Amino acid sequence: MNGQVYEAEKGRSIIQLADDVGVQIPRYCYHPDIGVEGSCRMCLVEVKGAPKLMPSCAAPIADNMEIRTDTQRVRQAVRYAMEFLLLHHPIDCPVCDQSGECWLQDYYMAHAGHDSRYPLGQKTRRKKAFDLGPQVKLDQERCILCTRCVRFTRNVTKTNEIQVFSRGHASEIGIFENRPLNNPYSMNVVDVCPVGALTSGDFRFKVRVWFLKGTDSICAGCSTGCNLRIDHSARAIGGGIPGYTATDGKIYRTVGRRNVEVNKSWLCDEGRLCFHTLERWPRLRHASMRGQRKSMADLLPQIHERFESIRQQFGDDAVAALGSATNTNEALFLMKKYFKGRVDFRLGKEVDLYQQRQDDLLRRWDKHSNTHGALDLGLSGVLKGLHGLRELSETKQIRAMWISFHPQLVGDDPLGILDELKRLIGALEFSVVSTTHDFEWARQASVLLPMAAWAEEQGTYTNYAGRIQMTNRAIMPPGDAQPLHIYMAELLELSGVEVPLDPGAIFEWISREVPLYSGIGYDAIGLAGTTPVPAPAPQEVLR
Image 1 (cartoon, helix red, strand yellow):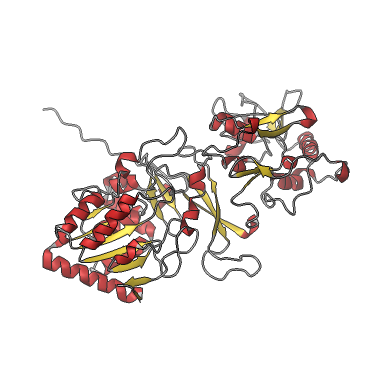
Image 2: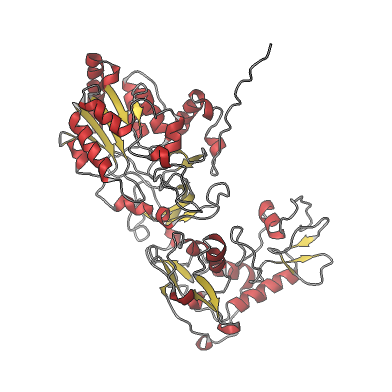
């Protein structure tokens, strides 16, 4: 290709090879996860011996194939394709939500640069922004008929809401028999649309994309652990840019990030929008003891002294902790260290549900991100979860506890769980609740600590299949809130155990002590995650 020699697997197409080796080929209709269409004619390449240019998305690699992607003939064909696609396209760039990440803009500058030969007043007018469904709007004037959205609903969700109607110049996409686009994955059509035809009702007109910063992370909406990108205001730490970032540290949207092993390119609508849960209740910003605001510097030593006092008086078993299946592996590991193994995480039926599918694509019934990680760390022991801890507290076998509570990002925590938490706090002599929001029930605790939420801390989750993946901090936690692993590290320091605050260093500690995670570090996890291979069982030697 272009004078270089490459090897490729049998059956791969030219455009797949080009992507593998870093050769840029323009495309509109091609998407690796929704099937080949070959209609936009943007990915044409010249193959030696072929009489015509070939669409690289539909042409398989053959032995000794000589391919050119940069000849004058190819460049002219791409320019003509761009002129055709822009023939009736409206001049909506100043008001189009896709502006700044529109492939028409990018490819026009890179491959076209022509002046329109079609008068503006004679451009075909079609129906402007209207609802395809509760989450997606369609502007038919901007559509270039790449059919990505059609193939997504046909090949991925198999719901077939979007179709191409009419023929020739009159062709346009729409919904079949006015059946709304309301499947659980509908907003993926916004991601796959290369132009501004399909836009998100949630993100529409909120902010220009060039004012946003993208942070690669993991969805914490269920145990699947879909890969995503968090788009947030441009500065995560203080300052802001007057006229550019009206608010600082705000999440505006999440976008699917491709990982073939987990979620391909997709997100469910629930997971995509779950960041709004962070705004559902007032955030907890400051620590308090018995309703009185306290500084963190004074409060943590007092908490440690009280736990130690109860241990000395009633024994180590009188102090325990309840983590959350949405806490990171790093936080749960340090919690287990400080509370000497007296830690559980089960609020309800997470262990029964974390591998159960909710549908045939991505969603699972367990709406926590790290149930598998908590199990790997050995936190499902004799304490028997929230119900067991409450019973032990009511019989005074447990007298002091730390409770870490993350509200579900998708759906609601069952009322029965909240009632159990209230009863647990009421039965304890001393209780510390670290949580993300200012919940009424949590105010009954002896000490209330603000905790960083998803997207406000770095660490790892282990998904339903045992894949360890990295969640990254996109924005800063509000007020005095800190990630749970910071609180646990400081308590361990007060106990005389030197603990690093860096999540990567904590994970190295995990890899030394948890056999399943042995030899794994942040470099090995990377952006795609990794699945540890269990050590083979020792074989019995026959004598």
